[in-house]
Length: 146
Image 1 (cartoon, helix red, strand yellow):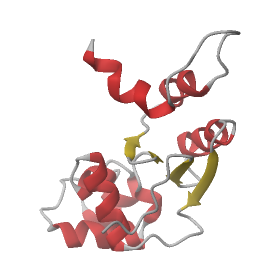
Image 2: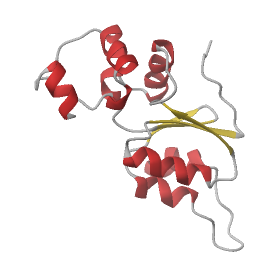
Image 3: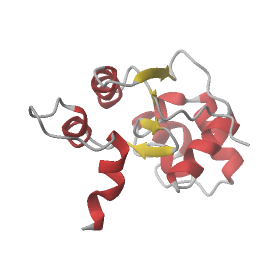
Image 4: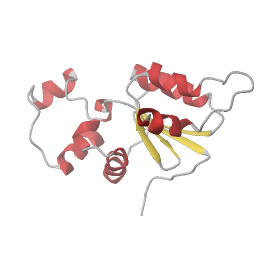
């Protein structure tokens, strides 16, 4: 059972407000036609179960959510990535949420790790007059299939 609400009429974004990509993606997402739930992880504690669900939804490991190149990570955990179990990586995210590498967006049951504002921006800008636009996430997931 999922602990994160999945609603096709709502976009949920997990971001850190001190991260420029996160702030900008939040602003663009806020401009979309769907309801928005912004989870600023600098103010809202995300549980270990939620982090695990986000990583699972993205199809990546927990450590792939973490910016291991961040100076604060290197200072505390060393330059070489430590060999840790999944629960240890979760503890890092729970205790140091500023280490989230990229914002995570949920649109219905689809999960996206947003790596650049420009990539995300082109999918939610207003359409040209009279042109139909596919749902936000469908464009991301079908992009590489042609």
